[in-house]
Amino acid sequence: MILSKKMHPSQRLLQFRSEAEQELKNILSWWTKYSVDHGNGGFFGKIDNENNIDANAVKGSVLNGRILWAFSSAYIFFKDQSYLETATRAYDYIVGKFIDPHYGGVFWTVNANGQPEETKKQVYANAFVLYGLSEYFRASENEDARQHAIKLYYIMAGRAHDEEDGGFFEAISRDWDELIDQRLSGKDANEKKSMNTNLHVLEAFANLYLIWPDENLKHKITELLKIFAEKIIDPASGHLHLFFDEEWNKKPHSISYGHDIEAAWLLAECAAIIKEDKLITLFKEKSVSLALGTMKGLDADGGLWYEYDLNTKKLIREKHWWPQAEAMVGFFNGWQITGDPRFLDATFNCWNFITTRILNPSGEWYWGIDSNNKIMNEDKAGLWKCPYHNSRACLEILKRIDRE
Image 1 (cartoon, one colour):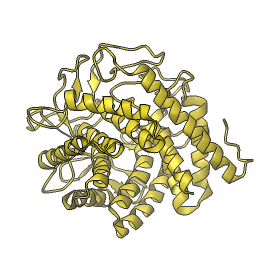
Image 2 (cartoon, helix red, strand yellow):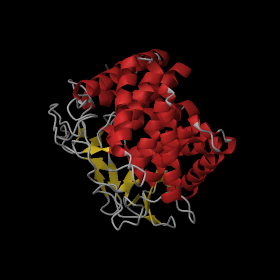
Image 3 (tube, rainbow, N blue to C red):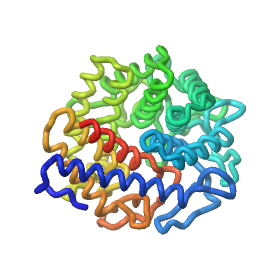
């Protein structure tokens, strides 16, 4: 439904909340209906736009970690036992198939039968499994889950942390040796450090802190927040630098509008979790700056463009599902901080774009809209397409409106 500007703001918020709650339930219902692999365990690794399942596809640790987080978080909010059951399925599969029994950490992928496939230790993937394990403990109070999370933290801090210049490296071999190719994906630069990996390490560590308020963990969170403030956020443009060498010298690449607006609220959330007043104040300011910078990437229809390539000086005129989800929260967060109606309007406009262009009538969200304004023929479920950005965005909106 279109959130009309003729409605009173409070009515728009209530309608927005109602629609977000229903959509969250739709998302979770799709994943429980289509993604559960009853034959080989866990969840299928690939499902297309028409809900056709590729039963032989590899299964990714990022997908499974995000499923674990999404259903754990949904259970915490709704107390629906079926969500906890799905989360437990994800937890059991991660512990049994993805955690490396010999060297620790998690594999990048396993095959359809659950045997190790790509065994590198991509730090981004380890972060998402840690994120999911921490959330699962919050949902289930399963002490083994907390211990798995703490052990994974120690491995990441001991093997992937840069003791000299701070932050975390991109990837390491199975036995924790150096890799020549550290890229997270084919479109990424092959650099030692990235904004993306360090953002999600920070996110995971902050979630772990909620269940294990360790002082060394807090120190790592503080270190990462300061790196974002001093090295990653460009104060002049209001955008994030994306890739760096190990000394945090930036490598020009692209402006990622989705990451800008995701960081806008996530960084503030992490600062609030560790309850450091100076950092809370600082990242409220950074949140607003990033949200204003992101507005440069908004189209007239309310959707958020994908990227601006700094090398070719070209706008990537695609609108992927996840930047739209993050925009819902990031602009809403900007409105909560400032009261500026531009941010609330941007939130509503983005939601209208999502509901009219991104939602798939049979469930889950399309990957996105291409440069010709057509639906992209990409995964509904896959290594990168998970119930994380969209379910988290809906949950955040519910929680934030409930607090208003």
